[in-house]
View: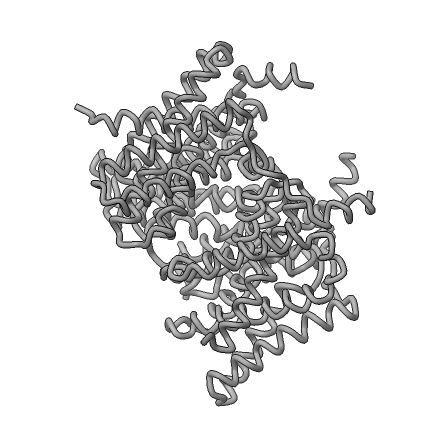
Length: 211
Length: 211
Length: 211
């Protein structure tokens, strides 16, 4: 029987794959292309983390991620027209995925003996880098660089994880509270349209002059 | 004296490098840029595979790939105008490269003890990922996500390789038949314009509303 | 007290981060996005090199690169409007970074026992690949493929390094002369507008026909 964490991992992978497949469909990718973009969105962050940590990527040891992406593709093929009504559901799923992937990334790095500042970066890469690769593949500027508190929620969650451990909490408690912090940060940021300031340096002017 | 496989490998590398250099020239890259794009098209897939498998990329142990890309660049510089007449020749060379790279990727993964589903993915990455990096570098949506049975031919060939081994065939026979399957799948797909369905989910509609 | 090389490394990292942050600001990235692009510009080349050489990336062992990027971001936020007057200063800093990163990359590869042709490539990747990732993230064709002697300066410097070692010089001398070669090559190329020929093969014509 799957554990609670495995179920959350499946939900998160499914939501991430759906987000890749939907954007691929908007660009008129074929089924294969959509599958690849969905898969890379789901496992890309964890793969970059594992390459940096020099361990074997998780998806190479368990075919569940391939199967989960296949189910996500079938979902979009059959129920694509109705996906729009489920927008809020997928937003919740996506945020669950973000929270879980972040704490998994933080936990894995700490288990390998890395200091906390590395672990927070690895958590953020696990949560957010898949979406960056997705956006590069569909030839768009990565969304997380321009809009929304997304990767920042990972940084917040990773930092909370750290503070919990500093306060002497058990590893399990740190993960739960860290994950919930990611979830709440993201939900609040979207609900109240909180975002970071846009950086406008001199190049904006330069560009203006050129045009 | 080079073996038959080494000759095929050289032909495949040359054809892949030419495909990168031609697209770079269409974007008015300089010689250096064209060389880099050609080189990355040729060795990019194998390099990603080797990073995932945690072994040293092949091009770092033998300068033949650098030399081969250099010859491809000279070819385009001197005979560029005549390349168009050789379109079918290069299509055949490119397909030979795709077939060879795929079975090399499958074989290398199996030799390292990975299960077949990982080996099929690694074969496909070896054959197709170089072209994806090429397309990212020239700032286009990767061609294989939208058009033609290209990476799918790798999946077909890898699966045939697997079935051959299940049927008790020798490793050498699996490779030959797997490679021929890639070759034939690609040739037939182009000849009869077989392609996968385009995925059109709800986002197409959404986009329509936005415009 | 920091050594002379550490000071140069800090200056180079700062200049590379500034170049990423400025381009991100021209694309209206938020602070977080600009920070990530600056960081990846600074450490991207060394990270790809270290993944290929199978060692732990330097930035995962010392938080100085994160801090340096943070200072670069603050600089652009507070003094962005005045950056344009410092254009020449940053060009010099950027070239110092390029020179240092190149010889660090060459030296690290040689120390790991790789042949010189691999070391020259690794030096060039260390110096130039961060800028390629930066340009992919901001959705532009990488600048180094089209304009300026930039990565070519790394190749020149790496080759000079090699010739010095062939001539029996000490490692330290090779690094100084190799680094100065990168610096002078780049300065002269920009001053005298030296660039490589544009590659125009048949595809230019093809494209012309299609349009």
